[in-house]
Amino acid sequence: MKKEGVFITFEGGEGSGKTSAINFVAERMKKAGVDYLLTMEPGGTKIGEGIRKILLSPKSKGMAPETELMLYCASRSEHVRKVIKPALKDGKVVICDRFDDATIAYQGYGRGLKLDDIKKINSYVCEGLKPDLTILLDVDPVKGLKRASARNSKDGRWNEGRFEKEKIHFHNLVREGYLKIARSEKKRIKVIDSSVDLKKLQDSVWREIEAFLIQKELLLPFKES
Ligand code: Z5A
Image (tube, rainbow, N blue to C red; front, side):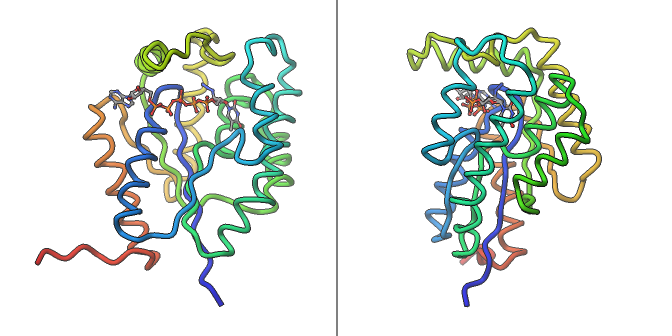
């Protein structure tokens, strides 16, 4: 029987460097022959992609926070059952750009919905699945939003999403929320300062992931020849 895989999530505010760090980690894992799957939330399935469009569209301005919560969780329900659990069963290292901590940080600390309600819904939706390791990239939202906006202009993504349009106060609440979650789960969540330059950030992230994969016997320790 195949050994169960591991579930690694990336969290952090807008422009904190999740995508850049995940792509770097994927390159390293590919070179090392690790069997991995990259995925993201909201999204990761056909239904999830449809929900993502609704959630991030500026046309959804004014959506009730409770509706927003249910849509993120509906996307997650599909994702857990159809993609994440089967991949873990198949022995893969699953790397997911945002997961349940994002709902606590954004809909809980950011929008002010009750944390206990969110935890109950998350637990129902995830059927007990929790990340084995979470990398939280922490950066001042002013800096993160500047990076995201520079990237959007470069890529021709002129239309900012619904969350990028939120006031800085909202992004500060989300950041504080993430840091509170991290303080309560120090073993699972590794906080990495993402205000440093990109190369430094990618190296720090890889060091955490490499150590974790070696500990789980999914990667052989590198030996100098
Ligand atoms: N959301 C929610 O509310 N509830 C939930 O349950 C879930 C999500 C799951 C998804 O948006 C939104 O949904 C998200 C939270 C909410 N909204 N917000 N805010 P998304 O998937 O479209 O976007 P995102 O997750 O926020 O990611 P992002 O904006 O694409 O940022 P990123 O992936 O963290 O950053 P990046 O693309 O790697 O970097 C951005 C740019 O900065 C890029 O040009 C990089 O080259 C540059 N960069 C990155 N790091 C550095 C450093 N260290 N130095 C210099 N430049 C850097």
